[in-house]
Amino acid sequence: MLKFNLDLLKIYLVMLKLAWFAEGRRTFANVRGDYANELVWFAKVDGAFAEVRLLF
Image 1 (cartoon, helix red, strand yellow):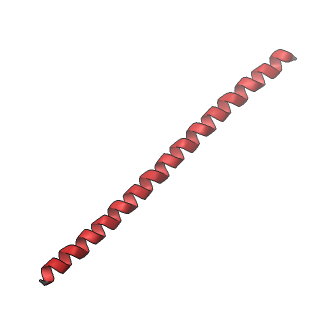
Image 2 (cartoon, one colour):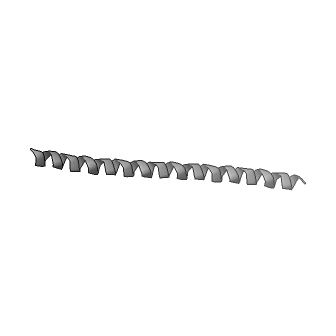
Image 3 (tube, helix red, strand yellow):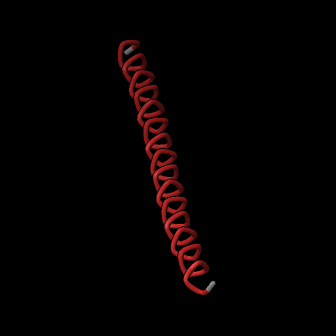
């Protein structure tokens, strides 16, 4: 019975590790998404400055 519980515990720990890893990857993807959004925002700002420069 004890060995069965230990096996369950090992499986549970592996699942926790995998869930933590997946969560970390999702967080990293969100950070990358934010970074991409900032790049788009910077491109828009650059475009606005270019348009202002064209006016003068």
